[in-house]
Every structure is written in structure tokens, then in C-alpha cells.
Image (cartoon, rainbow, N blue to C red; front, side, top):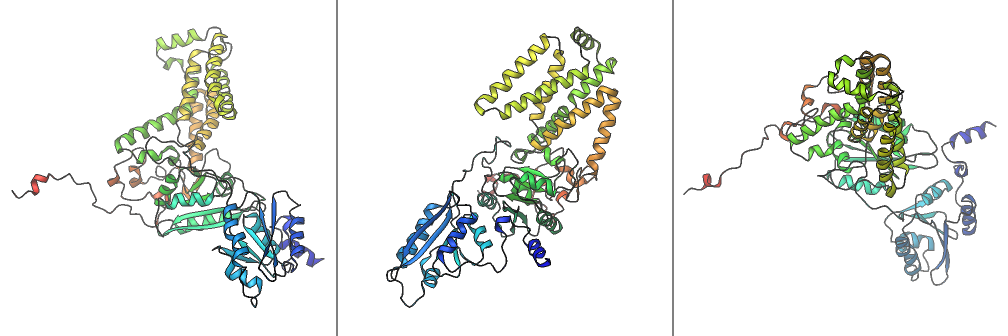
Length: 527
């Protein structure tokens, strides 16, 4: 009984149909091996078994086993079928057929030998083609992984006017190539591992050796290895497992679909995480202010980028507290509003049965419904649904006396401001926090709003992203990183990497590399 329990414990990480004993090797009979494969795969319709006859005298039976849709048919036909059938024809009679095929016939560069069932099924489900023969002690696994892949397209969320227009795809190898195309250095190290007992999803951890903090790299790898789940379908799974604190509305792991953002993070000393089957990559450590910056700011002049960044911080404040401030002033502090404006607002409230806080909640919920409807509606109809729905509902609500025109204006500006947030994750957090601030302002006015903001900032100050304070470089205050916070100084002033990533090599630009004025050619003319 004890032996059975220990055997089960050792195979716990595998699906039930792939739990084999260590001594469970392939059979010597080709028919038994094929029967075993079909049985374990449930005689699946996408399991392809191709039988061929190789050699001249005598002929040998060989079977090619693959999963339809996971392999590149052209490579399989060109390098496997033709090479076995043609190249093995003039084989030496004294050479065993298995040794001849293994050493001479297969022209694939990446061919592995598999002798156990567990390894065989893993290779088969990874898109490799199995080559089995009668009396062979092992199976040959040729790397023919391929199938249909989505081409590289423009980003769907993080669009820019100036900058690269490519984005990640669902293929990990393509995404790694997009990053290496930008960072052509041997110091860009990639460490891969598989996550998920059933999905066995490939996850790659990237960092620049000599720049990234080794402790951060080790911690990222450790957290990923500790993930014990049956399947990982998207990088959001990883984000939920590796973040330091889960009970917070704020994102502590930066996600992006842009290769240039990943390259920029690596050059700052951060660690990137790419995963197969998803176009969204992760960056750690991160800070709150990183979610409010756009990569396009580094492609523009520093003064334009600074003005845009300051405006974006203001817009985020409006998206977070716009309705709350309006409700607090209108319900508790009307004397602080200019007299003419207050008279106008009071005139609008005639016939409206709800207080300001109910108005705000009613309109915010309505806009959230329109937002979700626009996302779930087919793309050709989504624009019409959101625009027409917002106009009709807003106009009808005003005419019916349910809300005031000023409330519709405030909520509309807030909704537009939320779309200007560069990070979709932070924009979602602001949507959730906005309801809490509205409730505090509706119950206690500016005092309640102030107390809620104090609690919110204290909570943000307690957050960490792989040991990095969430509000750095403001709390704690880092003077040298202020050059790329609310303002974006010229490149010659950004000579050091930000301390937020804890890089080993702080120097990014050699000191004294200031731009020189263009010299007049006449000054060099001796005449």
C-alpha cells in the first residue's frame, strides 16, 4: 500500500492519462506502440498516423505520428517523408535500418530520441512529429511545430502617432524575435519554463545580464516555478500569482502588447515575462507612475512630452475624482460655488427627484453599461451602440427629469478622461475606486472625500512590486528620478537609469555627453 501511495505522489504533476511509471518504456512492436498512442489519445480525429515503406530490400515499416494543425506540413513532408523514403533507399544492407535513419536519412536539425511514454506524449502535443519503426527501441521526435499563426499587426490598445507599429502575437518565438530585433546584445538572457499541468504553457523570463537586479530575476523565476495549477491560458494568470499583494485595486505588474515597451523596460534594468498563446507581456518591478506614462513621450521633444505628461496626470485626477468633487460641492458646500453658477445649478434641479449622489451613481452605472455593451458588441456595430446610446439615454434622462444637464456633462467628461489613461489596467482600477470616492463625498462632503483619499494614498504607500515601493520616487523621495516623473527632461539629463528598477549599472549615458552646437563650415575654411 505504501508503494502505491508513493507512486501516485511522484506522478501528481501529470494529467491522469499521462501518469506512467519510470520503467514504462515504448514497446518494440510498431503496432503495439500505435495502438497505445491511439488509446491514450482517445482515437482523436486530429491524430494523424502516416504509414510508409522505406528501404529497397527488405522494406521496413515506418509510421509518422503527428497532431493535425500543430505541425508545419511542408516541413514534415520535405524533411521527414521524402528523406526517409528517398535517402534510405540506397542504404547499406549491413547497417541496421534504425541506425541508418537516425544518422543519415533525417535531415532535420532538431531531432530527439524518446524512449518513455511520458516524453513521447509531451513531444507529440508540442507539435513534434514522431517517427516509429518496427523493432525500434526509441522514437525519433522531429521539431516540425508550426501551423497557422497570426501575423504581426498594430497594437489594439497602446496606439501611438509616432513610434513602432508592431505588437506581440500569440506565438512566443515571434515575440522573442521582436524583442531581440531591438536589443541585439548577448547580455539579453532568456530562461524558459513550462507552467500548468495540463496546458504546459511556455513562459520566458527576460533580463539584461549586468543591468537587471539578480535578486529580482531569481524571485520572478521562483514565483513562476511555484505556480501549481492545471492550466495557464493568459498572462493574467501569471500576474495574479506573482504579484506581491492581491487584495488591492491597483495593478502592481505592468502589462503591455508593445515590444518597444518591453525593450525599454529591459534597458532600465527591469525583468520581462513573455508567455505563449498571448500577445500581452509583463514587466516587473513597476510603480504607480509608470502606468501614467506613454512610450510615445520618449519619441517626442522633451517639452512636448512634459506638457502631455502633466496634462495626463490632470486628466487622471478628473477621471478619478470628477463626480465626487461635483457631488461634494453641490450637496454639502454650495456656498463655495460662484453665485451665478449656483443659481443656474439650482434651477436645473427643479423637478429632479433624486439627490446629487443618486444622480451620479445612476449616470455612472449607465455609462458602464454602455462601455460593456460597446466591448461585447460586434466591432461594426460597437461605435453606433456607444455613441447613439449615450446621446439618446442622456437626452432622454434630462427630458424625463431624472438627472440634471450638469451631471450628464460631469459624468461624460469623466468617461472621456478615463479613456485617456495609457494603461487599461489602471483605467479599470480608477473606475472601481471612483464609486468609493463618490460614496464618501455623498455622505460626508469634502471631509469624507479627503479622508477617503488619505486612506487610498496610505494603501498605495504600503504596496510593493517585487520589493520596490509603489509610490517611488515620491515616497520614498528619490531626487535624481524626478527628472523623469512629472516632467521629462532632455535625453542628456537622463544619464542614469531610474532607481525604481534597482539596476546594477546605473549609468545609461556617459557623463559630459551634451549636444554641441552645429559648427559653421566657414570657421574651418583656412581662406
